[in-house]
Length: 343
Image (cartoon, rainbow, N blue to C red; front, side, top):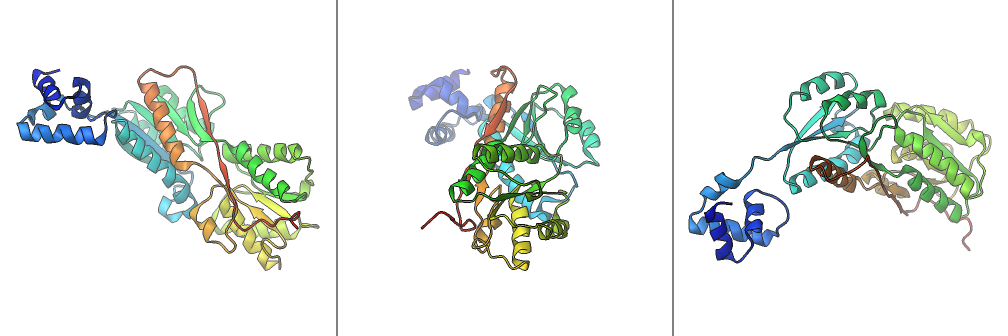
């Protein structure tokens, strides 16, 4: 360290290491210490320390993938899910002293985007891969840069990931319905290839078994994941075909729950007096419903932060092995579930 920097540390009564952290814009010192150092630099005329010691920030590239290319602001569901994760990534990248470069891709542009980012100077790569399939994630393997997958994973390749503990979340939802006296529970399941929905399906079957319940095959209603208004007619056709209506439904996400509530009301059912319902994701719209929707909270912001921490450890060579980190969910109790065993 330059003599002037050591002198500044002596004058301020702090360690030279603390001064170095401030000059290089690194975490590890308090805001008070950081402000103290910058004030002293200005007062003592040591501004040249900033240009001499401030390292150029290294870049983390963050690719956000949307299957159909719809802009996030045009999709209420994905804007709410993705924005929380993105905010966590943005905050933690800055907190760790890196520069963030964000790019977007869809199924028609992902191959070209991969070729484009090969030429970027980056220390690591984050993939928001909720809707990606393994073949698409494999495009990034031979880049030979530290990579962390967010909200998805690959069974066939050694790539670190940070994801939702879907099975745990579904078990919380089903167990709650069972504790409220519901023995006849239906399931509205997105029949897509996203790992989240696959894990929720197996989580539902496991939780039904562990709660000593049975579900008739016709009560597991599967439909496509095209989204938007296309969900409504398919849901209505399948639900109205039921011979016997369950007392409660678990749904793969809040948007499906919202469409289902519309169908139930058109059929003359009341929520929750006649049918209870639980969603998944806790999007902001869920608490504005009448009644507000009971749902599973996913730690979107924390997922982004943890993914960055995992990547930074890989960049620094401090992590060993391949990690699949699953973030625990929690139940948000609102008014869409009726207690059948309450006096």
